[in-house]
Length: 120
Image (cartoon, rainbow, N blue to C red; front, side):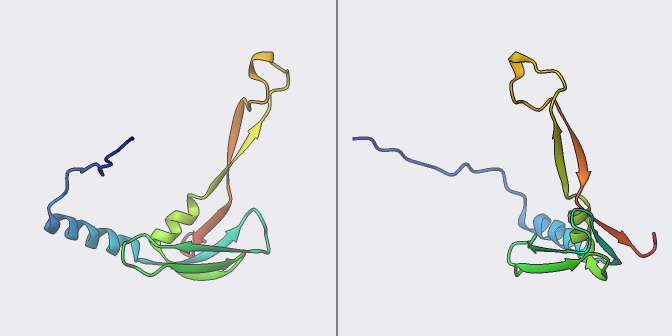
């Protein structure tokens, strides 16, 4: 017979007042509205659907953005969109028997872009 007892690791907690203050500050920065143009670089002319929720207790938002659309989004979602990248792996020109099938390097490309109107 085998009995295992599992315990969730307790991490040091911040004081509730300090935590609430920090969440209010983050929420204020996150919810600042930004007007701009969305570009879907992977599929120009297409749209992007995604679900988003950052703060516990908030409803899950399903967002659909179309390429070339000018809209107003919260700053937190804009930062999330502009940080969406993909890795394109490249194989070596010469085959090295010790590194079979392993990509030697990769290039990072942006998938989507949200450009604020004040920059345009």
